[in-house]
Image 1: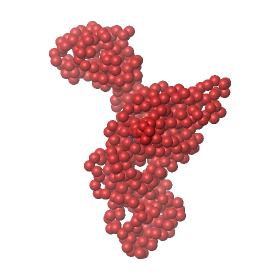
Image 2: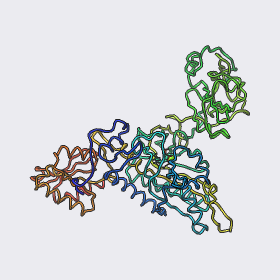
Image 3: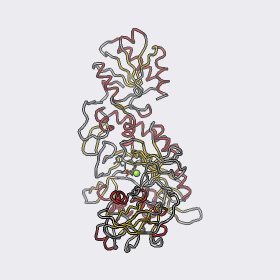
Image 4: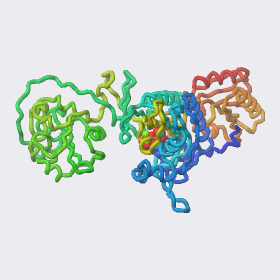
Amino acid sequence: MKATQLYAPTLRESPAEAELISHKLMFRAGFIRKAAGGIYSYLPLAWRTMKKIMQIIREEMDAKGGQEIMMPIVQPAEMWQESGRWAVYGDEMMRLKDRHGREFALGPTHEEMITTLIRDEVRSYKQLPVMLYQIQNKYRDEIRPRFGLMRSREFVMKDLYSFDRDVEGMNISYEKMYDAYSRIFTRCGLKFRAVEADNGAIGGGHSHEFTVLAPSGESSIAYCEACDYAASDEKAELKIIQAEPEELRPLEKVSTPACHTIELVKNFLNVPIEKTIKAVAFMDDAERLILTFVRGDHEVNEIKVLNVVEGANHLYMAGDKLIEAANSCAGFMSPIGISNAIIVVDQSVMLMSNAVAGANEVDAHFINVTPRRDFDTEKIIVADIRMVQAGDPCPHCGAPLKMTRGIEVGQVFTLGKKYSEALNATFLDEDGSTKNFEMGCYGIGVGRTMAAAIEQNNDKDGIIWNRAIAPFEVVVVPVNAKDDKQLDFAKKIYADLISAGVDVLLDDRKERAGVKFKDCDLIGYPLRVTISPKTLESGNVEVKIRRSGEFMNFACGEAVEKILELLNTL
Ligand code: ATP
Ligand code: MG
């Protein structure tokens, strides 16, 4: 393709609202334009990259037995009412009415659509397993659309759904997709981790989030460099921290005037923070008081608390009244002598000895608290309820965990029978019994993957594409396109590269060389081939590697071959 025919309006400035580098660069490099908050047009360069990502996805989905289909974006309310999600999906769902007043939604996801499709068509175990996928626009009226394509309201997603006879089959489908996702993100040239995820509301099965490592990411993950363990901070399992054995002293109440925070009490009593027990008071929807206890230097993980307290769906901070009703007071809480509360104690707290904890009265604490001796173990829940921290031991191999941030670009889930039961989707098994399908769902955000690639690969001059997903692999730049000799020479190399199967752009614009070079760096083509009077004279062409900034000279005769070799390394 020729640059004079390419619609790629580059800009000097990025929009004031753009916070992320990927958002700024996609705007400046002429990849996207905004129509409304979280709603974008993809211009040719973006769409070329997205098509390459989609092609990689298609190849890997097909290789695992996936079949591409296209389902409606406009989905009737009835199927969502049947699954029960019409009411619970909330404001994130974009809803509309037709001229007869019938309600529809713009699909945020397609479990309902595909399950109703399958239930009417697949009747026998002989037709299983089935894996169907599509790549299309999804709609989610995100509360805070931001970061350009990272969190938009209209975005392109690949979603695959698997239907199996039994749990074993479902797990095989899951493994296949896990493997395909690893291949996809590797082929895209991304540094990523498959992170064990909390599958919260869906419950039961397994889930991994494929997370591209980038400091700007919204997810916080713990990972191990010694083995391949990685988990979201919400999910990361923790081992019990063993404490040094010590002689136990008797429990004693001491006065701690105005010491209502761990910081104050630790300083007042002059004890290390690891010797204190911190309380955090929550309330659930039923207004039950849930008192949680962790070591002073640890933080409570609310998701883990929800997972162990039966019947709790949300946690809110508890007010003073509720705490007082439990015979305690804010700032001085401990499980000793408390009533009318659900008490959840972190497993590591139970190993502490001679620690400091609240005395459930104003301006008083207990010292020498030894929870396994002093807490009423019949009345408390002991569990892993704390947030992971850098340096905590890896649950798989014990090496110290590291923390990093990441961007979730894909997620794999086993759904089990959640939707097949809700929507009554069954098949006849070999023994003649009627069974619900065991399902899985698997999504990848195409635009978010492109944005994540830019977050991971950029410098002060612009984007640095990996060859596999670059809008063009090579750009050929005659320094002065008004010079016929240069232009002809450039056209020859351009034609040779096309014949060799390279995706190449000829920058035949009659702009100044500096302008063209700046655009090349901003857009981020992996290789730039420059034709100048100097190269014509010497019979060499100059090749610049975008990522390293290295320049190389190749004799004209071998230029194409050398470029192909170089491309294979990028
Ligand atoms: P998040 O937690 O980031 O809101 P999600 O868990 O709701 O995402 P899924 O339902 O798992 O997302 O969707 C599958 C994939 O679709 C995500 O991994 C992500 O790549 C992409 N995606 C989800 N929401 C958006 C969005 N608002 N904008 C762009 N891509 C998105
Ligand atoms: Mg997700």
